[in-house]
Image (cartoon, rainbow, N blue to C red; front, side, top):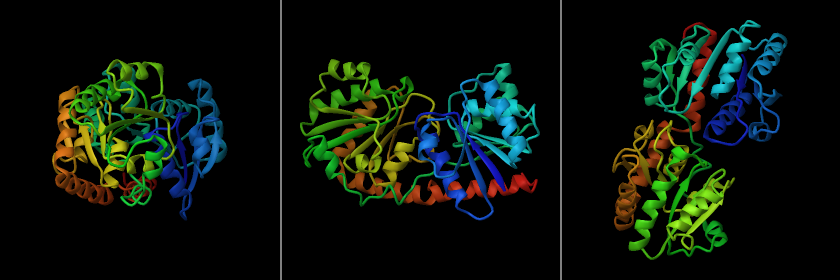
Length: 363
């Protein structure tokens, strides 16, 4: 089975991580011939171990023409698109060359505009299957008229061996000069307006008034920018806050933390940072956005709050600090939930099954 996994993404993100997990795992299995189609100098190109084919995707038309030529030569059975622009490129290419199966994964829960372009794109017969990473995203696709038979939900997966409770965060605390008796409240997210950094920082300001031994840690692509630094300074949190920027040692970052916060106001599929924190038995607070409620069961695996509510964030943080036994129990429940339902193995297995069904005409 020859499969092209294609993405236009250049930076590292949760969606990129999922694509790499999938392509690298399947490329090692018998019966799969996997090629990753990605831009030059992208994080996918740098990180993936699968066979790679480079396509400059700056221009969708020229990228589609090039992809069509590659398809004509390589004759893949399936093209699986992992990001919206890549999906556009594959659909355009299909007008130049026959592509047996085009499928796409949608990873964000932003409402899909009911405009001709989007209605056409997602309702085209050329899409043999659309994967939603949460039930909320599936509902968004149903609302614009995608047939239920075209949709399936496959949750993103977490590597439960890489993210486990036994990892040590001592070196991270040493690096950032955080004593062991200080509680670390961490937010891991690439910098974007919809990630809710301002609500997180407002909550931090409130918590800092009540808790002396507290430190706030922000990690993610482009978080160490002047705007966010100013937001921290404006709240007089600069002496209690570390903005670490992009890091490759996320398991150690989480191990050094006590509570992980997802403060997003829109767009989440299911937060990757929250999945990883739960896999490490950490306390999590997450806004009820997208598919977060599918993994964060309120006071079962974490605390679920309404978005745009800094008071709710600070109250949840204080609950965990004041109730360590409950925090421990929720973390243990979280690890069990992730390992049973949100693991990389489960994600890959479901894709493997779906690919087989598409090849056999059963899906």
